Amino acid sequence: MNQENPVHGLFEENPDDLRAACYQGTDAYQKNEGYHTRTGSSIGDTGEVIPTDRPRARVLLVYPDYTERDRSPVSTGGNYSEGLASISAVLKQAGHQVELLHLLYVHKEADFKKKLQTKGAFDVIGFSIRTTAFIDCKEYIKWTKEVYPDTFITCGSYHVTLLPDEVLSVDGADCVCVGDGEYATLELCEKLMAGEDHTNIESMYFKMPDGTFKHNPIRPVFEDLERLPIPDFELFDYNNLSASKMNTAIVMMSRGCLFSCTYCGNSQFRNVYPNRKKFARFRSPENGILYLKTLLQKYPYLQYLNFRDAIFNMYPDWFDAFIALYKKEINLPFTCNVRFDVLTEDTVRKMAEAGCYTIDVGVESGDEEIRTKYLRRLMTDQQMINACEWFHKYNVMVLTYNIVGLPHEDLHKALKTVKLNAKLKSDRIIPNIFYPYPMTVLHDIAKQAGFLPDVISPDCKVPLKQKQFPEHHVLFVADYFMFFVKRYKRLKKWPKFLQNARENWLDFWFTGPLTPRRTLVFLYTIKAGITKNLKSFLRNHCPAFYLKLRNRRLKK
Ligand code: SF4
Image (cartoon, rainbow, N blue to C red; front, side):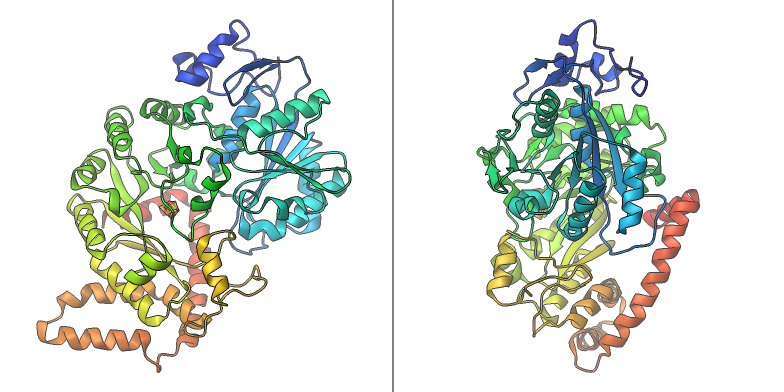
C-alpha cells in the first residue's frame, strides 16, 4: 500500500472497473475519488489499458502562476489550472506520483532552488509555460538542471504549443509537448521508467544528443472528454487558492473554441492538430455533472462555480441540456463566458433560472471596423445591446472584456468602446491592454504595420508602439475606462436640453488635447496600488469580510 495514497489499489480486484469508470463516469469511479488506480496499469489516449510492472515515476509540475512582475513573496492564493490537474489525474491513474511547485511571484535563483530542493528529487519535471512568464521559465529551467542534472525536463502549455522550437532551444529543456499533454506525458513517463526509446512519442519534440530537434507528428485530439479522469483537484493547495477563499471553484467542461478571433491563441491552437475540426469539445452533460459532484463532495464549502470554458454557450444544444441537468443536480450560483452572437432570450432565461448571476462576455472593441476587419468578430452593436437587455431583464450581471491599444486604434476609436459599454449598461468592466501573442493573426498585422518592437520587455505595460495611440493615451483609457462609462451611462438622468452639451464635454475630456493624461495615469497608479494591497490583505486575512463586501456589491 502506498502511504501517500490511501486509496491506492482500490481497483486491484477488478481492473476493468477502472476502465469502465473512466469512460462512463460510473458510481464506482465516483466512489473511489476519481483518479487513483492500482500500480502498474496505464490507459493510453486510445483507451487501451497498458499493463506494466515498471517502476512508477516521480513527477514535479512547475506552474508559474502570475501575470505581474511582482517579486515579493506571496504566501497564499494562486489559481487552479485545469490542464495541470488533468495531467496529474492521468499520471496518478497510472500509479505515478505527482507534485506541484506553484510559483506565485517571480522567483530569484536562491529562492527557486531552495523550493526545488525542498520538494526532493524527481524523475521528470514539467514546466507549464505561458507567454508572459516565458522569460522567467528560461531561468527556472536552467536552475533546475543545475540542481538536478539527471532529471528529465519537459515543457508544455500555451506558449509551447505556439512556439515549440523556441522553448526547446532553452538550455536544460529536454523535450516539449505540443497541444494536449495528458497522454503524451503519460507515455513519456512510461518509456523513461522502462528505459525504452522515448524520442518517438507523438505530440512531443525532443532535443537529441547532437543538439538537433526531433519533431514527431501531433496526435489527434481525443474527442470525448469523458475519457479523461476527473481532474486531480488535490494537486493544488486547494483550500488556499484565491477562488476557494471566496468559496468559489474554477471549473471547465470543455477544451478549445469554435471561433477564430485574431488576437486569441485558441484560434491558432487548433491548427496544430490533424483533426482540428474536433478541437472544440465538451464533456457530456452527465459527465460534467459527475465532475462537479466529485468536486463538491471533496470541498463542501464551495458555494459558487466559475465556468472558465472559452465559450460556455458554444454549442447551444449541449448548453441547453447541461443547464437543465445543472439546475436539477447542482443548482449553485455560477458565472461563465458567453458569446453574444449565439444567444437567445430563452437561453438567457434558462441560465438565470439555473443560478447564473454574472456572465463574462467579450465586447473587445466598440469600433465596428476594428471588430470585423482586425478582430474577426462578426457581431453588431445591436446584437450586443439586445443580449445585454435580456441579461438585465433576468437580473444577471454583465461583465464585459474590452481591449485597449489594438493595432490602428486611437482615442476616438477607444471612445466608441467606452460608449458601447455605457449602452450595454455593463455592471463590471475589464479593459485589458492588447498583448500580441505570437503566431496569432493580429500579432502579424501589428508587425506588418510596424507597431511591434523587436523585443517586448516583460515590464512593458503597452506592447505596441503606435504614433496615433501613444502609451500614456492607452494607459489613460485603460485606467479611466469605468470612470467614463459611468458618466456616459448617467447621461440619461440629465435634463434633455443639457444631455448633448454634457456628452460633448465628456467627449472633449476623453479625446481633447488639454486633458493631463500623464498626471492622471500617475495618480491612478498610486490609487490602484493601495486598492490592490487592501484587497489582497482582505482576501487573504479576512476572507469572510471580503466575501460579504463582494456579495453586497453583487446584490446592488
Ligand atoms: S471566442 Fe473567445 S476563446 Fe474563442 S477564439 Fe474568440 S476570444 Fe478566443
